[in-house]
Amino acid sequence: VQLVESGGGLVQAGGSLRLSCAASGLVFDENSLGSITWFRQAPGKDQEAVSCISFLDHTKYYSESVKGRFTVSRDNAKNTVYLQMDSLTPEDTAVYHCSADRRVPLYLWDGCPPESEYDFRGQGTQVTVSP
Image (cartoon, rainbow, N blue to C red):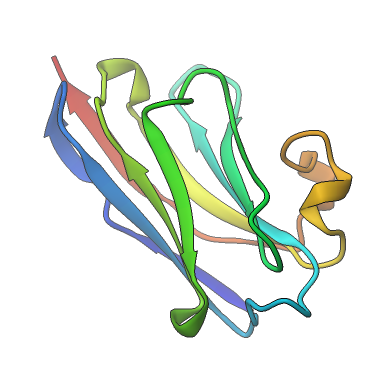
């Protein structure tokens, strides 16, 4: 299994970016357990799970810091999860990566799975938001 993120870059405050997490070796369909979570980590700050999406149904979660601005989605045919980020602020500046848990249905968690649950992780993509 390989997770590859793309779509990061430099954007002005108020702008938008769409991140992609392409998963090879995973199947997204109604028979697949698990989920994909988008994390971010800014310098000097703890890692934060910003959003996650189920493989098999429409369960999604968002952190309070991004709710209403970020939208997570998936394309099963492409085995890709997207994170649409709108109304970006400098506080969104971080390295974003995706991680996959392929054992537990997302609806069994009250939010995104804890960090101990993930089987695979991508390398990350830098998002920088200028004032």
